[in-house]
Length: 329
Image (cartoon, rainbow, N blue to C red; front, side, top):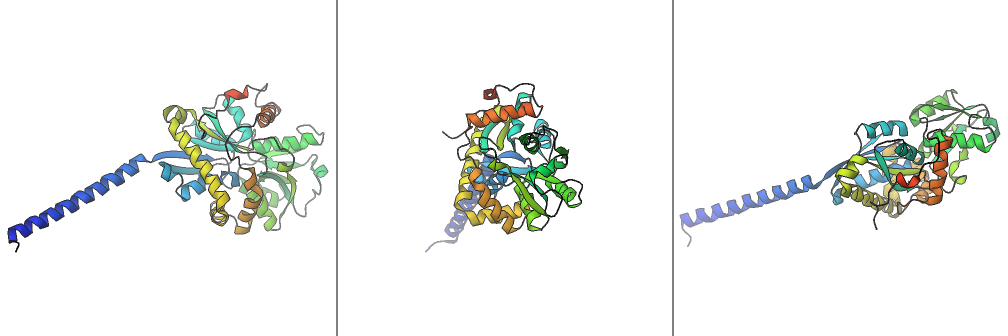
């Protein structure tokens, strides 16, 4: 039979073991928390479906399992996105292909992956019952875009040039966020919008808008969206860039394999109906670049766009503006 002193000793031993266990769990949890590297990710537009893998990876834990804590913010166009990155408020920027020109102009970043190819994410929408019935009706009229020098700005200019009207045959108004542009269209302040599909499909769903131009049908060799990493992150933590890109590509694959879950997240994140999110999924999943690698022909088109936009006087050496060193082998 165990004596009282022995019982007290056993109890103390059990309590001690329990305390050690609690401490070990605490140490392990603390270690896990410390292992999470915070990455600040910026999206050029909140509703752009092509940027959704960042939200998918964050919500499903695909980034977290790789040791990344993703913080996502959105901006009213590439210009404001670049301002945030230049101010060291972002580590990763999800922007338009023409934004590559700003690397040549000295922006403290480098393109690290081709996010999406043909510009299927961008369309021109006009009032359903408005005066613009065909593309020919756009001459001398006003289309809104996000910011000067942006992807939507260049596409609006391309539309004008394709009709032989030069770069100013269509007037271009820079109105920032998609919501502001939609409001301007509804009140007849502009004749149409060159913007991302979530806004376009929602205007159609509301009976307000009608798709006039699908830019993805016109331009094949292109990188409509690109992932940029700040020079500071590249220099201080190159492994974080590699890890982010691996998590991004895994998130794209998740979207391909989990349609319904992706549509649910897209509807909530983009603040659109499930039908709009579903339509985005059907039309835009094919544009994602599954390797992140750059297409030389697409880079040639982009280099010409820099000159056409007036961003650069001459086509730059594109090899200095991007790297594939951080992509999975």
